[in-house]
Image 1 (cartoon, rainbow, N blue to C red):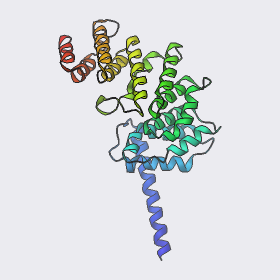
Image 2: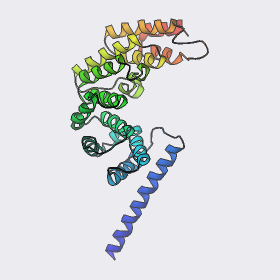
Image 3: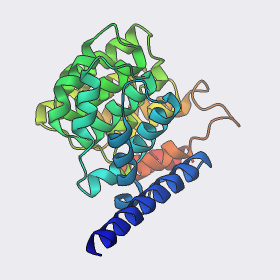
Image 4: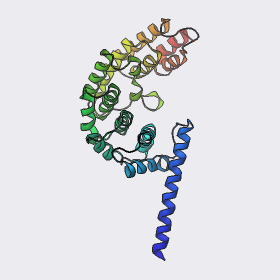
Length: 274
């Protein structure tokens, strides 16, 4: 009798997990990609499915969807301390199994966001391997910055920009800006310095509003030299018809960042161009 009851409870739990995963997939497919309200019950089952079902040559669309969903909601995993996916991702990326480029990018971005340094070795390999596809190297370079080697990561990002293997406007430092538009914390002071220098380099060369806005909000929260550069770049952008074309690009986002992070000078500059 006890065995039958145990079997029934196991089957009931499996059905519940499947139902949750299917519901998550349905909401994703319907375009509902926002932050999940209950990551323990919405993301963790998807992690369970991928760990259980992964095998070389598995259905490409399924692998892409599972890794994409986990990537988009890995903040929820970190919030609840669920790092089970780190070891499988590290193993799969290390092996010679055939993975799609999208799956690789999703896995690398997830590893960086989760911040577990046990993944640093394989991520570094992807970042420095020039035979990898540019967008795969891009995700690896961002991830290695977050995992503790921003000097190497930013050097790779600069190389991708200078060789034009990745479009410059794809390098907006959004992955280095966390909640409330605040810079994410890195592993060391040296990493923070390397990343700040990279964002300054990026801001000086940026011509698109997205890269400019993210760079400025990042730099306004750093040292005085970075703040001064942010104000110069902001005013140059606000005066340039190439960045904010009348009736096409909305500069309110940049103005709000200046007012929020720039203190009195930022508020005055925002008011001037309001």
